[in-house]
Length: 231
Image 1 (cartoon, rainbow, N blue to C red):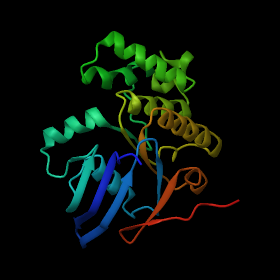
Image 2: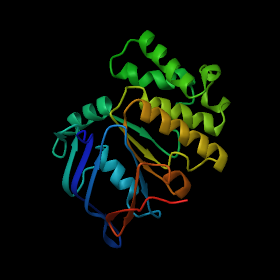
Image 3: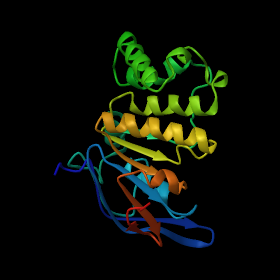
Image 4: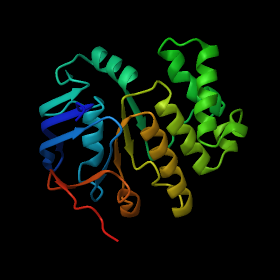
């Protein structure tokens, strides 16, 4: 069995609020391997986003260890964490966060250019990824000229632009209607699978979650693996 891309051990996360301390993660363990799509379900406020933010090195946990590609990232400096994110991790959110003044092509090319890829090479790869997502004829359109599903496909393309080994998606279809949601998820699933990306997808959509390799429910700060869904 291949080594995990993401390995989490004993992860803890507590927030200090006006009402007191709020613990959302209590000793979470999780391994995700190349090409594996893992679903994360749970009600709002259960800690799904906190887990993804910690796994993607966007937030510091209060305890536990996080390793990406075998490297312990727990105690890295903010600069080092940024480098790991840029080289290794792709993010997709419920809201696409595309740059409105840029075309779809430029939105996808920009992360590659930030990573040092030439504009020519970045736009060429961006065009290929967008084409794979059915947007070949929409690459020069700005976000306002695209439908909600098209905008989210651009966001997926952007997340995969730098060939990340780990993809973290937080309610990536939460703002879409059921039909569009299914199509966008299928795009994400197939592209991540074909590139051998390890993916963790937080969702409220149990139908979508049922198509993932493994599904975990986050309850009272702990992950509980769900039994495979049967027909």
